[in-house]
Length: 122
Image 1: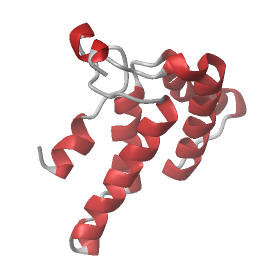
Image 2: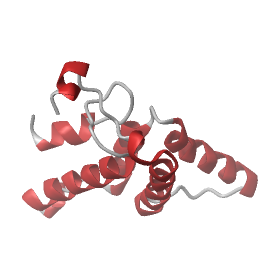
Image 3: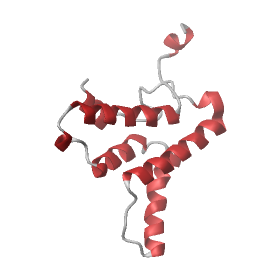
Image 4: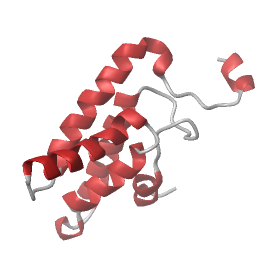
């Protein structure tokens, strides 16, 4: 799978292939984006708007992480604010929420969707 295909299709959740913590997934995903951007012409880098949309899509199956988008929309209406979260602001909120999830559930919060037979062999 090429890097762009991975970046656009990676998902976190019960049906994903990710084995690791929530925070590790987010860090891994952002590192893959950095690698992609470093490979080519700076004019072809992924825009922050696209990064935001792709990362929101990647974590939407985790209710706590998906709630960040819903909460932002509510704050915009409440405060009559027309500005959207930037990618960096969203990433900061997402990392904080992921750390809370990982801390709350400790070691058993890791996503591991391998077949049981593979887990036993570990």
